[in-house]
Image 1 (cartoon, one colour):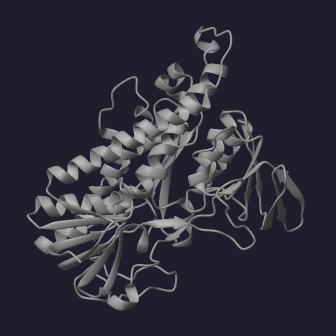
Image 2 (cartoon, rainbow, N blue to C red):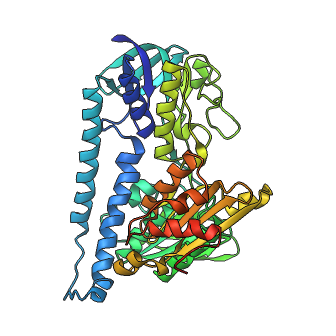
Image 3 (cartoon, rainbow, N blue to C red):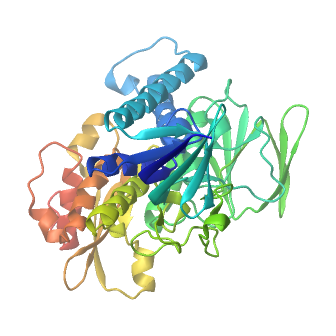
Amino acid sequence: MPEASHDLVVIGGGPGGYVAALRAAQLGLDTALIDKREAFGGTCLNVGCIPSKALLESSHQYAHAISGLSDHGVKTEKINLDLAVMMRRKKRIVTRITKGVAALLWKAKVKTYTGVGQFTKSDHVTVTGKKETHELTAKHFIIATGSVSSTIPGVEPDGDRIGTSTEALAYDEVPKHLVVIGAGAIGLELGSVWSRLGAKVTVLEFLDRILPGMDLETAKAAQKALQSQGLEIELGVRVTGVNKTKTGCTVKAEDRPSLRCSHVLVAVGRKPNTEGLGLAAAGVELDEQGRIGVDEHFATSVSGIYAIGDVVRGPMLAHKASDEGVACVERIVTGYGHVNYDAIPSIVYTSPEVAGLGKTEEELQEAEVPYRKGAFPFLANGRAQAIGDTTGQVKILAHQDTDRILGVHIIGPQAGDLIAEAAVAVEFGASAEDLARACHAHPTLAESVKEAALAVDKRALHI
């Protein structure tokens, strides 16, 4: 069995793991990266963030060609869907990006191992690949194995008609009727994709709202917009089981008639991917939610072993994992590493997009934090009018006494890009007045951020 020793071994090649490995190499560590996939990038690049956004864009273009071009004076005779071409485009994008990650790792001289990494003791990891097995030792280890799809009792994905996001990203035909269980980001994004392409989509959510964890006012606006696009959204529904039939599926729920459909997407969240890591052999402890317990510096209960990303507490977001990977490595090498969790955006890439960071109004009210609110609708923004996308608003929450920005919540065109300005502002402890005084180019969607900041002090100029 080949043996090797490194300064740092990272287990998991997703956005947390490969970024941690790259930063470690920059700082001079002899670094190794283990992943079970031959294509690095983890769930995000292979069967998550990137392919879903590729399909969201393609389906948006299709829907826009059907119903959105006539307003611009562009006339089309007949629009046809070639799903196979759309899927090939998605695959090309994924391949291009995962190969790019491999090139970055090669350039940085990170040693890569393909296989399943498992601790045999606290300073040894065995990598079991298809052809050979490696025994690795290191001074430091970072666990960055991400997450896997959660399931619910009575609903077992079969990789065919009952599937998770992985299957919903690769249907070879448009479902006649797709039932989505769960109204979080994944369910609503993929529901939007197939709705745009012609499927009937019904979303069943156990809670009394969509997008749990996001600002409630913003979530309600998103629900209204999605329903206007044809998505059927039913709240307060507890699904108890799904049965396959010869022609599709039957979804059973409490206090509701059974629902027949062609496909079911189980999108009830994700859980830490810690199975098979040999954590018990290493002495690493899990918390009550099944996550790896870490301190504020990502250290586990075992000296020399760290964990980041979806396997630890906090939102399961690719960019959060990347920031933690960098901070963890910098802590190991320099003694200092930090992530400001109030400045980490969450984005839902539906149409309209939904983005938020910091505290929601509900959180501030529950904590009895005094705040002021400023909001500005995209309907009053010139650029939004020009592109024909005026749904939504920018909302800024600032402390009543200090004016420091506590939360920013956006629903509307390019919300996922606009939230970056808010992230920078929160990172530097900016006030609403700081944003209000910054000059924003005209005409841009970003002017709505400035106006919302002005609105905090009741000084908005264009409403």
